[in-house]
Amino acid sequence: MTSESLDRRFLLGALGGAAGVAALASMAQAGPLDPPPGPIMPTQRPLGEIEPRTVLSQATTPGDATAVYVIS
Image (tube, rainbow, N blue to C red; front, top):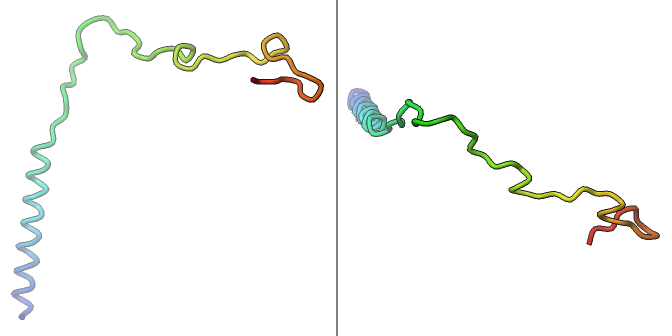
């Protein structure tokens, strides 16, 4: 093989790769940039609805002789 044939193969490979990237890039499309109609409202729920918590205190988790709080 000569240097010229290797250069030609490299050039053809690079052109083929560039054409493939261009074809994939033309298929990738973003969504619309206009916001949906209607009033702006929060989309998330408060943490209390998702993961309710219990406050640690002597009233809710009384301890015993070996622990300040006992979670059962």
